[in-house]
Image (cartoon, rainbow, N blue to C red; front, top):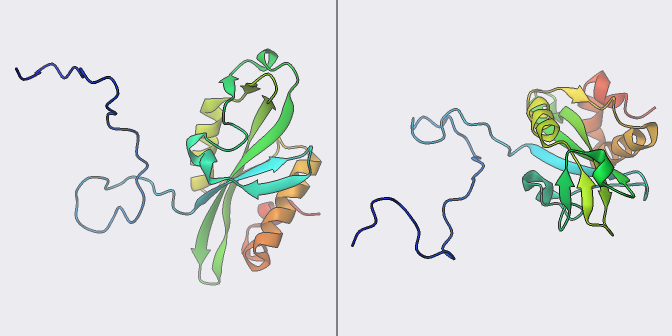
Length: 175
């Protein structure tokens, strides 16, 4: 008998998952995905002020970075007993006549206690800051000076020419 109600008797069978559309959504076909945002030019950078490190972790695009795995996050800071600070920074690259440059740079706070497997982050903040980065905003005011310096050094070391073509706001990350 055909199941017209869409129930799934096979519990192990996976349904459609969330897909982030990428590529050129304005190629003229007028079909599925037209007008969708492309995340092809966005990169998540993790800043670890305790270890003095900044690095790319593409898993953060889906909240699955190495530091986020196996952690139960809540929007309440008090649920993280021994918090270790991290910053997830959304970096968007754009291109002008001179070449590529850092266009949007927005930081989101995370606190993680790996031993207790608990953490704090504000999912709405992460989503909103991701959107702001895509729109070219630079929002790093919440970051401590050491974290800003680590981020600035990372961006400059990654591609100094891109860093030099960026806005004064971005270049201000390095004193």
